[in-house]
Image 1 (cartoon, rainbow, N blue to C red):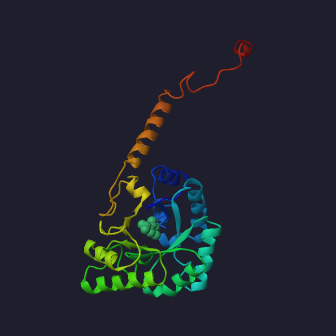
Image 2: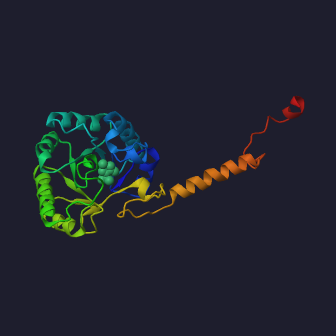
Image 3: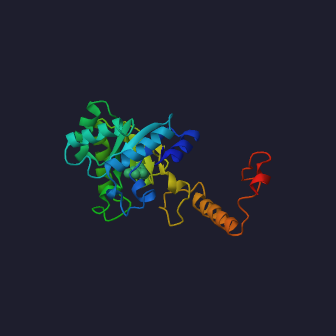
Length: 257
Ligand code: KIV
Ligand code: NA
């Protein structure tokens, strides 16, 4: 699984044969420059979801329900999920939380919208987690994560994202829970893996999380390419006459000059 946020990134996921594409609310920070994921609205998410749906035809498509669109009631969550499917062209939704969201997951899945749960480091709750930090490091906390995973599975979630939790804990959850686990910073014991595309592609040179492996240098390549363009234009090396230009109709140039 990989996150995508627009038409080209979705197209790359399609070509690279990703099984699942997630339009994560992480796009708030990595694609829109917001300070926090909690600033992105459902309408903004839908705009990106539609673009991704146009670019990725084969992968299973999941839309992340942004902060404030599913917490107040199961009915509100269902309305937001229906919009994800109807207006966003997504096939499933994701939400952050454990046992406390079991009734909500039941409600959404009852009408045939698959739900991906997300536990561990849940960025929408970063403030109450003390920031972006590893979750479930103590046995007591790890047991609570296992309970959360079992609760979301029991409520009907088709899979669960495990973010930033110790490898041993994620492996144990994967053994015990009857649904696939998708890890991000949770080790190879999970059923599958997810990364944020812009992180995996090396778009930013700022420190990315420890768990992220960078598979490209897109940030550097883009900056270098644009700098080469600026240099060419300033030195009048681009455009090249004949190569990047159009001729007038035959015989017309003389009359004109
Ligand atoms: O928003 C996001 O990209 C996510 C994934 C990292 C799971 O929630
Ligand atoms: Na997210």
